[in-house]
Length: 203
Image (tube, rainbow, N blue to C red; front, top):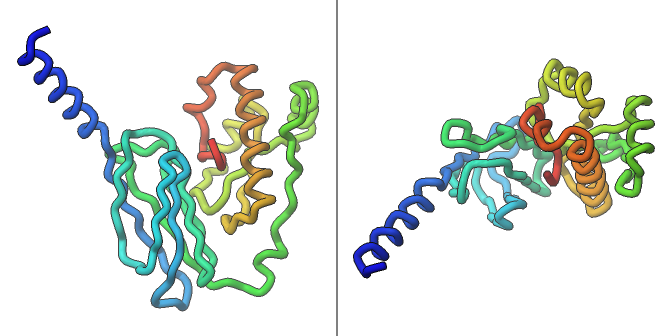
């Protein structure tokens, strides 16, 4: 391979890498009485952590289209986050909804059992009883019709939890969702992932 050919291949590779990048816009819907906040925006897959001190929209760059898990936490307000199941150049907006904190906001959270040690038989028993659910943290624009369709086919429901994530609920969400993922892959292959009505936390 001559030098000229090597340069062409290198330039093509660099161009391809940059062309795959996705610009994502993050916007705030402020339903709180705060005019300024501070918080942390986090992207699990890229391990990006951004300090936020403004309600102005901002843009981030992701390496390629695909499924991502976004999180936002602020001590000033109660925050919910929703976004497309798969980020693409057309579906590239993340919305963070802000609401006032209430004194009893933490009390309404329902503990969820960690099923990471469940056998396939135990999961199937839970499906028959309607107790196996993916955990979704935050407001993710859940469609009841889409959730019903998914549950009718695969037997798995969805539970939307407060997106203020403490260490215990974080581990529970990750462990539960990954165990359900393993079961569905075993039972149906990976095609079910394209039919998810919302992105489960940690997947």
